[in-house]
Image 1: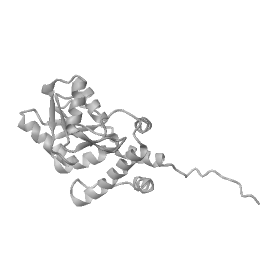
Image 2: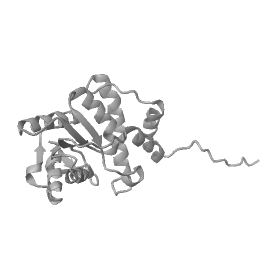
Image 3: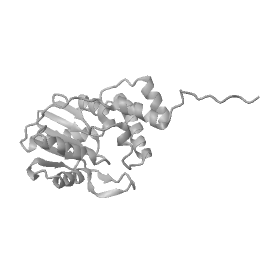
Image 4: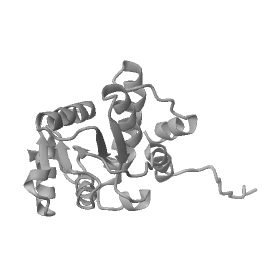
Length: 216
């Protein structure tokens, strides 16, 4: 007897699991005008471009690019000659941002330092520094919020990322395995950093943690 084939609706792909992580990390906070815009460095240049768009629309008065680590090319995974902050600064200049509105923080090696060092820089330069828009990758927003609450209390922060969809973001030419590796790493840090005090603890729903384990 030939056993009939049946489609199992519970079978999920790597994309399905990644989309669960994406939806969990994305906060969708509404924009508000702030003193400055901070862009933590990463392999992705789109946060820098989107931050410039926000600056040009008047959402902030100046922009700080932070990152002392050499930028990584997501295609070749090789290090570039410029730091993340320098790479982002070049992008802002190419988009017509005036030099007096661009500030580079070239010492930070992690997200907490990105935030603290950028705020210190704003104070050192005599800039208004009570409120900030933080522009990062879409799947980094929740962990960024947890780090802010722990490491830089007392300031107003709006966390945002480029307005895109999961499907568009993962079809830009960057290998999906690179993006998904970053996503699972972020969920792992969200758990570990909450336990070691680097950020406030965050409860990760079972569905999200299951998707993380499956994607790993």
